[in-house]
Length: 327
Image (tube, rainbow, N blue to C red):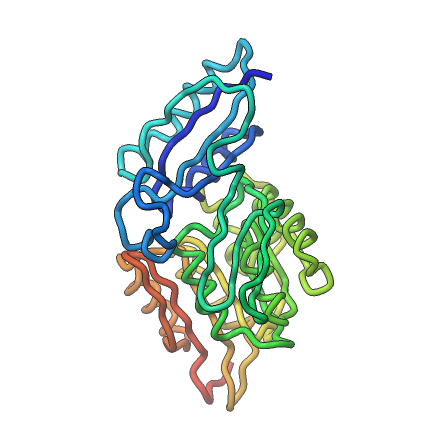
């Protein structure tokens, strides 16, 4: 079969934006991702995060028919804001016989932190250490490829704070990568998202990683989150709100800063805490421009900052409820 291939180079943070935008127009073709080879291909993911250069090459595939040109124009217009802001370059078109690319389909293997290894489902891999935590993901249009700096920073904090038998909430689960990571560290996870595509992606990822006994997936939100709508302003159906008071030992939420600010009181309400221990909250998905606003909102309801991971302008923050507080 003959295909039209659209290839574009992106920064580390742009991969998930591209996928989310494609979801907005119901793109159903393949998405292949490979390490950018226009420079030294041995450069690590961590180094890529610090360089304002291309980190990955994405290839999109459209079957050639009477609608192909219209679809190409729609995708080009959709991605133009990312191109204008330097997050990707202009798509290059080519006619190909197969939906494959140099380096193989989604041939990425990357280590995050000390233990996490993220790779695609079909790629063979032998663990380099006994305590490696391997996460296998298919490329989906849900946020959370493991390539975005925000996701990487959240994983580094989760590696430090998740312990076996924790009861945790992954709010805005996206691809399911953070839920799987926490489950493989021994936690019991409730994965929640208000996007149907994300719910399906999380369910699939949980199944392929063998953690179905530890992860419950549902469509919904937390407290005031049910009134905030989709994070990219897409239309969503009404979703249920989690009714949970002092239920979770840890919450991770990797999404826009405005959501963290709006849900500050809800985070506090559902975290377990007493006079000797406070619930943990790990937040990502925003840049340093929003750090003060997020910090102010959380401190106002009784949280204190305990840890931080940064890469370029991106950051992930860990908070804990202050001791000896009445609810």
